[in-house]
Image 1 (tube, rainbow, N blue to C red):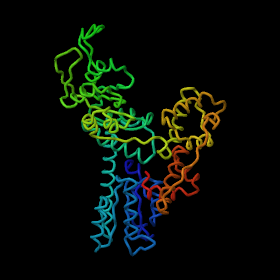
Image 2 (cartoon, rainbow, N blue to C red):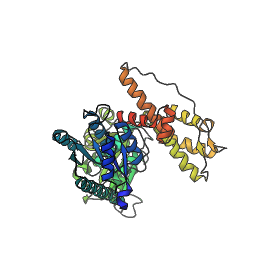
Image 3 (cartoon, rainbow, N blue to C red):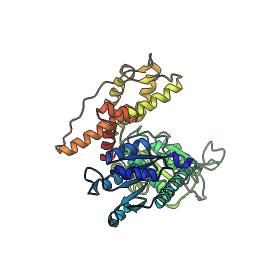
Length: 452
């Protein structure tokens, strides 16, 4: 059966005689075996089974169910779609029900009927295949909205999940962050993940347009409204009707225009410059700024009521220097992109250049890093970008003032793992070698620290 051979069945059983019996009774499936939690986790990563049968009593304490439940929890954390069938004793219904509550697909009491176990395993495979096909079809119809974002930083991963959660609503989103942190990338991702994805995404930079022209750019104007208004022209708000409007650098919006924008947000209607007719507009607003709007409000430079109208959902984007491992990861991505553009596909980045990039503070954030790598790709003479090509001076490390040894250790391990993964471009085997640990140990550390 070709479908059953696509992903194997893993049998976790410490009794070798019973393990052979189960494998023999399920011989029409592609079976792999494990006798304890450590070997099961190794097989899990190596074989990626679709279905697992497992005993709860595993070494080193086969009379206890603690190892079995720990393994079940780790399997569900690794891939919640895996179908786990728990084999229990005749009088162990409480533990069987607990296993199902934790995510197990089904349970069987030992001794089992081979025909019934075969039927249950086959149904588990079928359900796994159906769920995988549903995911594949959904992915075809809904492309990755945040494909333009490259990160491994836990803060940024949480922001991505926030963007995905709020995308389906019409809530106004405010993106706060330094210049160059990727606010427009997130805004476009929010639009692509929303029901408005097939309509227009329109962006306007409130700081880049002269104050006397900004009103007509936003709201449009009627023919004859002012000298040179030869025809009726739609503004950015009306152009984005049905879609999404991004108001970049909203903190630079002139004070007199803030009242007109507030009225639009309340009424969802606009009047063009020189016009008297109210025009209904259905548009989702995303605004972005690097400024502290509440501080501006206290100085009477920004309307407080407008701030609260815009800040229905606030997303604070961390600067690149606070995203552990992201500078090296982005450097690799930019090298690939610009090397391809310059027809230098064999170009790579050296370890000393990566270290220099990791130590730099990047006041200009991702935009500065992008320009730095683009210049290095153009100027590099050999097949490898060196620290001289990058042209960065190393920065002094900051001291950690925390005195909690457990927190310091966890933070140091997390920082080291993220930095290593960024430096080797996500290769787990190379990261383990760089950190001086085995690959299973690295996987266990990542699981304990909540790193996917």
